Image 1 (tube, helix red, strand yellow):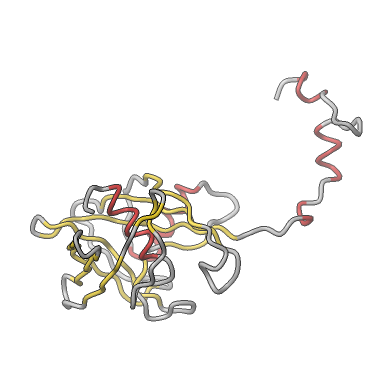
Image 2 (image 1 turned 90 degrees about the vertical axis):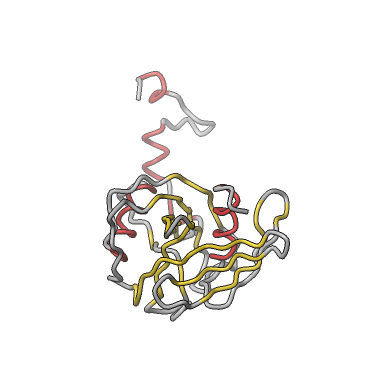
Length: 198
């Protein structure tokens, strides 16, 4: 920072250093920040998405995007790649930010904002559940745009997840989907629209 900016003072006559010395970061409530990864692949020419089954509360037993809490010393992209590797063993991805999701009630643990990323599964990657993921699997994506429904079908077991969707003001509305964690149905719909699938 140049000397001119460092010497500027506020209405109390404080330089930046003086202001920071008495600034109380605890004065304001702070939300937690997580990252979620929409990892896309293809199975026999059909689009697919990587999901993990949650091992712990909240949403225990539900399928979800790989992700987790951001650490204080990492960028959003670094956090996304770290969480993906910890939960699935997948690395070597290039995350592209989809958007931020911050409805106050989106997580029962408290005020948690997530930043979602879209990325492609590297060729030859074999995702395996690890860390707090009980399972990991690729789900084939089928979209019925007339019924506004996305169907996810587990490529190995045939398990299905039906995800209804609608859009309001250019973004997906939150419509819960059975067996899909929290607001991940909304994030999925936004990702599918961005990718031109719906």
